Length: 143
Image (cartoon, rainbow, N blue to C red; front, side, top):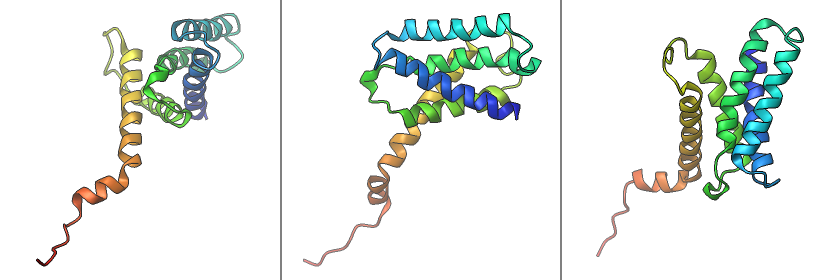
């Protein structure tokens, strides 16, 4: 159940940050900072609402996925890509272990990996017919 809540937090963090940043025209930094501050302050003042695992990890996941939501509108991103990137971030975060231990920028690195992966999936599957054409055998025509 905790993992599902973490994944839902990742989805909400990326989509909500993008929504406040782009359609509401608040800017990426302002949207990320405002939402991250609200989540962090909420769990600081109310640490006993959820179990201690979620109280510790939800702010980190939300802040990390708000980095995903800071993506520029010029990249033609859609909400499905943001949802996918939020899920990927959450899954990587849950299974990262001590890989990033002792290094700064772990949340940003995971956010970058998740966002680029979601762009890659989208580019790959949006051009399925093109990929099929690349690997199909050319038809031999008689002269």
